Length: 134
Image (cartoon, rainbow, N blue to C red; front, side, top):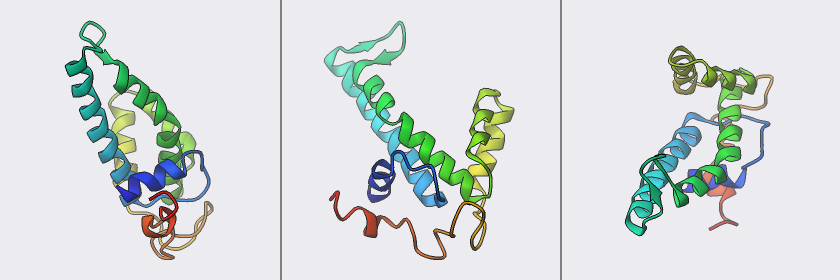
């Protein structure tokens, strides 16, 4: 949960690098929260079966658009790629597979053009950055 809070706290930070753990923990909690909110939408009657959307899950999706773009940009920076590579989302299947490969790739060891290695220097650890939030 701390990794998720770290990403939310840095919701508009597009500079720097994000470790795989930071990225994938954010993805995991997004899936979990979206599922839970979808169930709650169905239980309280705010789920529209025709459009396959729910009120609460839609509000949550809007809430995490910017943090998602930011953490994805920082994840791409960790492998020395620009955030503009996210445009591959617009290419069905092939673009998604390329991005998946990028997201699971090990980050560059040491500094690159986007900053210091977050793993090597123990940057971006939730223990240090979420104390004020928790």
